[in-house]
Length: 94
Image 1 (cartoon, rainbow, N blue to C red):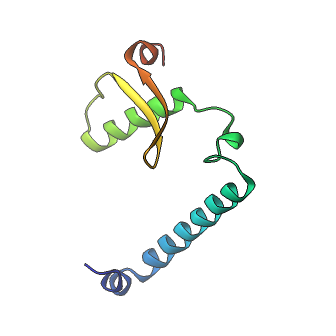
Image 2: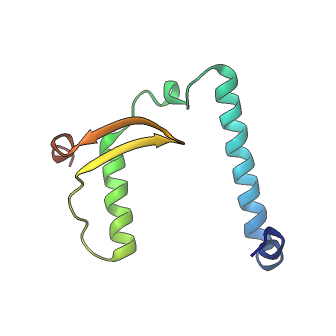
C-alpha cells in the first residue's frame, strides 16, 4: 500500500503520524545542534526498572500470558548500543 492510498483511507491518522514524526525529527535536530548525544544529557540516566516494566507489560498485552524472565536487555539508538545488561543485573529489577 502506498502512502497516498493510506492517506485516502485514513486521512486524519496519516496526517497526525506525519506531524508527530516531523516533531520528533525537529527535536532530534535541535538536540544534535546543541551537541547533546541522543538527548542523554537531558535524561540523566537510563531507567532499567522502567524499561523492564514496559517490556513485561508489552509482552503481556500482546500474548495475554505471563512474561518469561528477562535474560538480557539493552538500550539502543539506531545501530548504537547505549547500555547492555545481563541476567544477574536484571534479576534485581522488580
